Image (cartoon, rainbow, N blue to C red; front, side, top):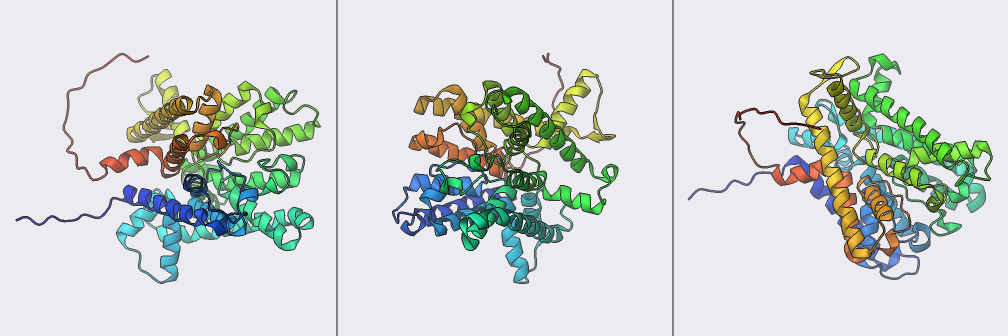
Length: 447
């Protein structure tokens, strides 16, 4: 009788299961009565929704974070945000190094995929740099924000508010405690304060660009032409999106949603909207006052998201860059896709197209399901679903009105968005071995 050999879990599957375990542990803690401000048991579905939103650094909430959760509940949420932002594999790797555990080749491969590194060499050094950079950014942001919150809330409460918002911003999570002023208000009470808005914007941008880019910038001492192609694409696309988004929101809603504000505040809020809409989920004005054109552009920005190897979600800026470059090459009838004097492999182009197809399919299916289950209108449902899978956290007020099944759909979309939509699909086929067989080639009509 042949003995069946048990093979270890595939890397992608292990990462997916690990994130699920983190969410379930967070759910258990949030269900407990000593996590809520009223000392009551939180319904399992709502606790699961909150834990998934925090661990997947999304920011969609059923309850106002400050009004419903006490300090312990907020601490659990912040811990989930930090683990989700860094990646649970990175957190485990840090503890392994602290305990002087030797990292095996398989473990290095897992860390490489979780951290979004392009090579397996030096992953343990990368982990140390990631943790150190995260600590520097978050503590610096907390110190700056403490100057704003401590005078209003007192030293300890103000310090907690500063730390919470700094971590939430850098991890692009979108959770806030400003419900202390008005539940569900997010940062609307701070929209006229450049110091807070610009500090949070800087944290969001730093977290959304990605650790690999910052490491590359340091290694190249800020010289753009010496950067790797990945870093160049991330910085170029991010800069274009930030600038175009700011100008669009200013032009589209300068005389409506921003009416009555001085030009400096219009510019500030337009810039903050452009920063936060791609992945962070904070908002400094009532989204229902925005024009339909702005909401449509926001959906497109949420779909794009941040950059690979960062705390952000979405289809990623480099995916957009590759597909646009592919279109340009096709229009110019070029055989290769070329960016900054470098050829992009056919495999990368196919992967980028696959990512877009998976995300679009999930968005269409999710929007249709929520529209049917809750009778929601198309725009709010599409906005909610895109925000979930893009791990953004913005909503047009639909989240708290969803039925249980719709909430579970949103939970799955947030989970898929954080793990990676394509990665989740590949989990099914990860262990299958395929043999390359040459097939006949035939052309078909396109377009």
